Structure formats: C-alpha cells, structure tokens
Length: 201
Image (cartoon, rainbow, N blue to C red; front, side):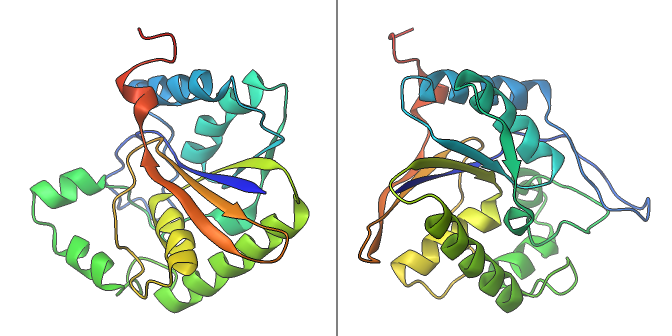
C-alpha cells in the first residue's frame, strides 16, 4: 500500500493562557494551501482520507476527501504530541524569536508541552501498523502534523531523532509498505502543488 503523509495547512496563531487546549483552524493561506493540494491529488486514485482529530488537520483533509467523493475518517492516534497545550505558535515564529521552547522540542524534551517523546513515538508506531493493516493494496492519505510525519518517517528510516526535518505546510511524504512487511520512503516533503499546478499555471 502507499501512504501519503500530509502536514496540515498554515493554522491560526493562539497565544495561550486560556487554560484550555488550543485547537486552531486554518488561516486563509492555510485553506488555499489545502485546496491546492486537493487539486493536485485529484488526478490520483485515493482510496481513503484519514485525519488527526485536531481542527487544522480536519480542515486540510476535507477538500482532499471531497475531490474523491470520500468521507474523512478521524483517527485519534494521528494527533500531535502537544494536542493539550493551550497555545499554538508556528515553528517559523519560534525560530525567528529564538524561543527556548524550540530547542527543547528539537531535543525531544516534550514533557512541558504534553506527551513525552518516547510515548509519542510508541503511539505513532502503533497507528502506523494499524493503518497499513487496515488498507492493504490501497493508496491512503493521512493528514496530520509535523511531529507525526517526522516520527513515522524516522521509524521507517531507522532514525533515532524525533524531529529531524521540517515538513512544509501541506507537504506530502510518501511511504510504501509491501505485503511482505518491507517499508520504505518514496518521497519526502513534496510541495510542487504550492509552486504550480499540473496544468502548468
């Protein structure tokens, strides 16, 4: 089977302090990114569209599913490690402001953000196995988050680091799982749909 890991589109910023989990939706740019991806994938045979339960992922998955006449299947295991955080600050902003939380995230010190890194890795390994078992021989889109894409890819590539590359918003990372159990990465961080369209415009 072929599994297309998709990071959600650009979400709204939530400063935090409200005491409840932040669950931002997409910005206008994020919605445009999601639609461009849906248009790009419309020519491919897609058998199922899965999504993290978080709003930014569901809003990214919806136009992809609509283009193929499918319903979005919400998979709890695809949620990000910081789903219970009361803030959402884009990585780009954290990098530009030298936010100390970014260094902690990269180092895998996630306890202050939510789920411990090792527990998160175990969860993603389990959901990866579940998806592959549930959709043999099919092409499936899984819309999720940067941490999920990082760890799922690291598991296949045997990389110990949890966050080892930065998936672009609505980027596609293609994973292939053969019937004999071999798993491989066919592409990483595809973003051609953001630079142009299949008709050249």
